Image 1 (cartoon, rainbow, N blue to C red):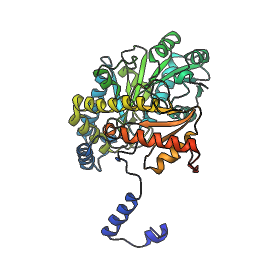
Image 2: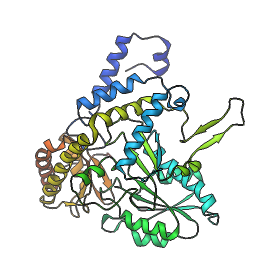
Image 3: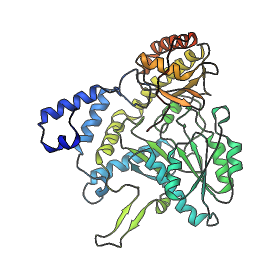
Image 4: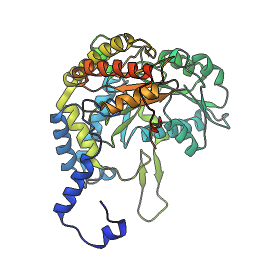
Amino acid sequence: MTDQPAELFSTRRPAEWIRAELAQARDTEARWADRRNLRASYFAGDDVVSLAAEAFSSYLGKNALYGALAYPSVRRFEAEVVAILLGLLRAPSGATGSITTGGTESIFMAVKTARDWARRSKPHATAPAIVVPRTAHAAFDKAAHLLGLTVRRMAHSPGFAADLDGMAAAIDDDTIMIVGSAPPYAYGMVDPIPAIAALAERHGLWLHVDACVGGMVLPFLRDLGVSLPTFDFALPAVASMSVDLHKYGYAFHGCSALLLRDEALTAFQRFDFDAWPVGLYSTANFTGSRGAGPIASAWAVMTYLGREGYRALVGRMLEARIRLVDGISRIEGLEVFGRPDTTLVAFGSPSLAMPLIVDEMNRRGWTLARLTDPPGILLLLNGFHHEIVEDFLADLGDAVARVRRGDVRPTAQPAVYTV
């Protein structure tokens, strides 16, 4: 596209020109469903994408904000998706939840709900604070910044795990909330949620489990007999959980969920206002208007795949993870970080320049996520990655050899999550 925005807007363009421009722009970018994409890309097959797209497009123009008044099917789909999640995550009777636009909003609303709960339950907390592991998502800091709270983030992850001693020492009378991840994005190891839950019980804290990445994976790993720490509402101390449906739930983007242990807690989540001429404005989320398309796509995909379909996809990812961990460990100079529990594998090297290895793998057509602490590579697996394990390991071994010989020149690409 060569036109400046003002010129582009000054004259109407034919639909054929727009379609061609969209196709050209799209085709020059990375393909999100490419088998060599091991970054944050979630693909369950063309059939799933087609069905999700059909459901999404059939609900274009419908606003979930008005589900109760004008679009009861949207309210129904949301309730059924939430009920499925509560069942998967072993929530007690009376638990509830709501669909949000993404993990950041789910985390924001969890922090907001905990803050308002603490105003009644912990009135002595005059400077409310949240205690989080080093690996907790940045959205906790974003939420705290906007809500006037303090985050006490650990400085280290001993053995790539949450620093339980540090978290315990950080708790005081101002602490209202403690966080664990299942798993955190960085290393793929589920935090020791039972031990974090014990801290929450001992100090009367709100415990949020961030399962945005693992919420639609861990229950099926458990079905497959994988030994996992308890991470969900089976622990009585867990007050809330966040789960992204546009990740391993395979809904279209703009779809996450905040789940609460007890419906009574929604009193601290909701915002109600009626001092204007239009009547009651009452929302469970930060956003007002919400597209119904993502909710419809989640409902369609979840009912299409069912427990059996998700379990099969997770089984293929488990196979890929096992083979990758074994293969990476056999390449001299590389080591897997910790003990991956889910579909994420992180690895690095105490002696090799990992940024150069990423650069070389990129040149070979692989799309990878970079880590900084310590320098490394994070792989996020999809249901088709069992097909490319040997190709990946062969290229990785060659890349390591080239870096060791000094044959790889660095690029200027930084290690960022998002900019």
